[in-house]
Amino acid sequence: VQLQASGGGLVQAGGSLRLSCAASGRSFSFNSMSYWRQAPGKQRELVARITKAGIESYADDVKGRFAISRDDAKNTIYLQMDSLKPEDTAVYYCKISFNSWNSKWGQGTLVTVSS
Image (cartoon, rainbow, N blue to C red; front, side):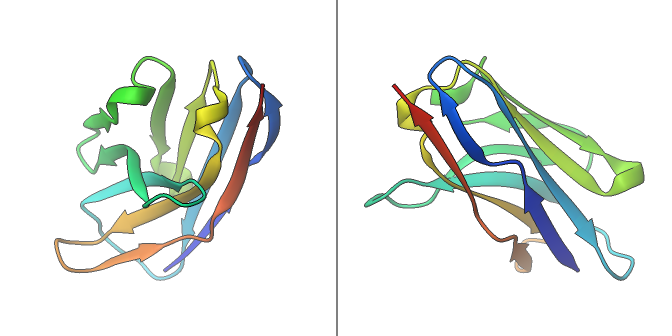
């Protein structure tokens, strides 16, 4: 399974961006798909997750601003990011968790929010 991430870029504070992460390859099942981010000098942190059942969860600092969704027909997840803040600047990674011990990361995509 391969993950192809896209959608990063430069945006002013208060603006919006949408990230996409498409999974391709052999038939697969999974527990969840998620977005993480890593800012310079900081640890990678979970931003949002959507389970196979469609249950969403978010980090506290993005609740109400970010929304994760999934298009099963396209094997793609999306992260809609609104009201972006400079502190949202980071490299964003998507991840697919096949089960509790096996997962795969996509390549990172840079999101830069200017003040």
